[in-house]
Amino acid sequence: MFHLLEGLLLDTENEQKVYRPEELERMFLYCIVWSMGSLLETDDRVKLSNHLAETAEANFPALDDSIPGASLFDFYVNDETLQWEHWEAPEWEFPGVDKFNFSQVLIPTVDSVRAEFLIDTLLEKMEKPVPVLVVGSSGTAKSQKHDTSTLHMLSWHQQVQRAGR
Image (tube, rainbow, N blue to C red; front, side, top):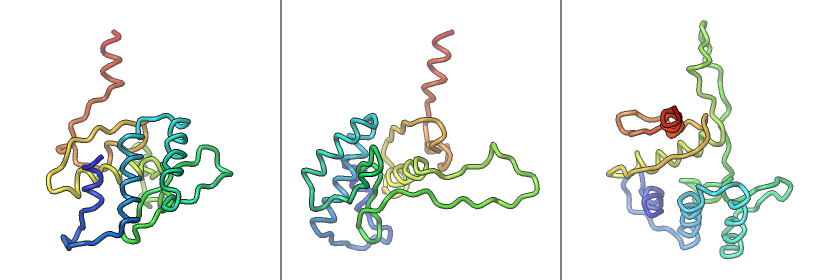
């Protein structure tokens, strides 16, 4: 949790930065969600989000009640404004090549954008990268965006298949 907080607090230009208490609280809430709450199932994520909403009511993003399961997991703290923003996948643009190889295309989703942000924060913003355990369903780009020399990956699914033979 504190490595993630350190990664969020580090300034890319190495300038001294002063944060207001509410900005620090937002970053701390974000770190609680993605360190302690990242392994929770959707129902439990909503429970954690509701508890944090009661604790930090004045510094909590407005959740859309019309969306079932809406929670703090749907938001991040913007690096520049230090305000809550909703996770969104960027619009995908067709690469415009003559021979299109679908298996080589990575179409960004909210899950892949979140995974990329978390991995970047812990591996690339830190002076010394820290160990990171990245879990999630297949197709969330956990291993696609980073140099494999910095990642030591174990595919649990493959290990379980081998053990079952």
